[in-house]
Image (cartoon, rainbow, N blue to C red; front, side, top):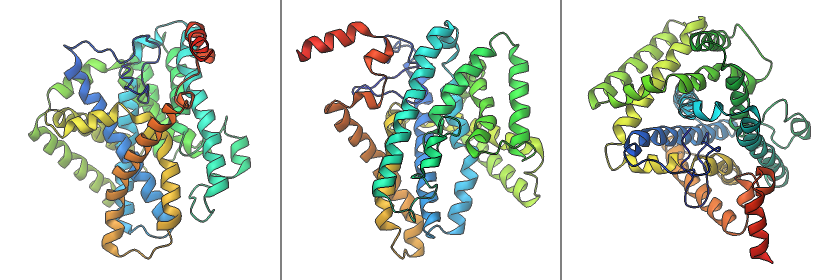
Amino acid sequence: MRSGRGRSGEQPLGADVTSPTAGATPSGRAGRLDWVDAAKGISILLVVAHHVVWFMQRSGQAPTPLLAANEALASLRMPLFFLASGLFVAGPLAATWRTVLHKRVALFLYLYAIWTIIRFTFFAALVPPAVDPDDSANPVSLAWALLLPGPSTWFLYALAVFAVVAKLLRPVPVALQLGAAAVLSALVGAGMLEFGDTRWAYMARFLFFFLLGCHARRLIERLADATSLLRVIMATAVCVGAAGAAVMLNLRSIPPVALILQCLAVGFGVLFAAWICRYRIGTLLVALGRQTLPIYLIHMLWLAAMMTGIGQLDLASGAAYALPVVMVPVLAALSLLTHRVLVTVGGRCLFELPPRLAGDRRRDRDRRRLLA
């Protein structure tokens, strides 16, 4: 998977952490890869928006149409994120088990563990229970965190699990992998198969898109290369029409329907990301897509702090609809600024494995010499 390590050392979620030259992209391929970063940028903005609406719902400030729109976008935000994360993972997963476990699984589980503790401490100390929509300060939930992933860090947990699953499935024919993952996604999406935990259900539903990105990269790149404004408009119409029909005809309980809607939404996401990259406005999405990790990890803390005050306000209807539009870019900017400050003051270990854990003894030795 492509790395894209930024100037401050950050990694996009799902980045290739096995390469010692992370972020180096051959100039001839940079344009083709920009759309993947744009797709990640779109996904992270949708994730932040989802959490804003989630907190607004907790405080009783979310209008019903806003909740409906947020629910409809569920078919796009995480499936597209996992597809983009899987696109460049085939090469790294071809390495030895020791390398995969050390370079991928250990990294994501380390980040998951440390930020689960940070989130618990922050919410327990600073966030009133009435503001928190997921009981994040519950010590029982913290104790079970290694088996039942938390609400705002489960994507990291999923990336670690998916790396192990994809590695285990390497000897299995690709068609069988995708077919089994599609059936699993369809059954869970229709409510016919339950896991007793929302995040494990999410992982069961979205494994298909991670494996699709891993094994169908050329097909997906051809779709991206074929984008145009007309195709984006057509894809939008198909997605809206299919989603509307599924709701009006009450079809979502039929196993393949939710998966089909997600596939249509992901197809739109690929076309739109590739199309928007052709214009200057797309550079912002590309930049965000290369810095998804700090936004993903930090924005919930700022959101909870802000909603502690905003949640007490009696918002007019127009303000309620405008609030997510205003808060999403603010939260993204605050998260990136916080990340930069933390890295500057020595908090790089909050965003990557420390050299000792990463096995980079030479770099660790060099750092000690500099500090001596």
